[in-house]
Image (cartoon, rainbow, N blue to C red; front, side, top):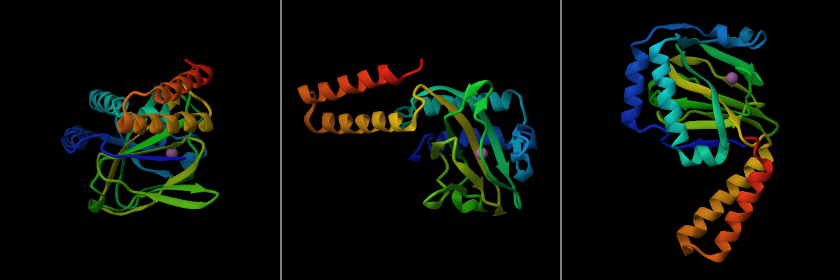
Length: 219
Ligand code: NI
């Protein structure tokens, strides 16, 4: 299960992030790939320093303030955040991300797109699953969140450049099926509240959700 989050960053926020990123220096992305993934990785990353720290702070704030992200991911911490750049000819072949990032379990991965999709060709995030592959290329400011266990790749960029922020989430809830139940209960309770206001039935759903979260959360 993956989710497309709309407008994690407003156009103004995207502009601020892009100003910071575009004036920064980039280094080879090889350093942050595992031994096997390195074989297929060809991209660049914003170098360590104040610039990337500011981007991380802003992206963390934007995601944690996005109700769709919080409901879907149940984030405990965002373990690692990188700014990646793919210029013409660059790609990241099929790979899986590390299970542990900085000593923390990585349950979910996200990609926050920061380039206008019309400004580059290729560069789709491709998720390989049993039902075939899904290509994802979103508007600047939108993000996708998916299971870190999934095999995925970034298709070669054939024109322009693709800037994105990628990161990993340690969730309070380890199991995807349990996160899905909580996500669905959030959807139902929100819609019921919008339709009927606070009712005894809504209270029962909220009580059930809270009881499940207490049972499943690893805080
Ligand atoms: Ni990856």
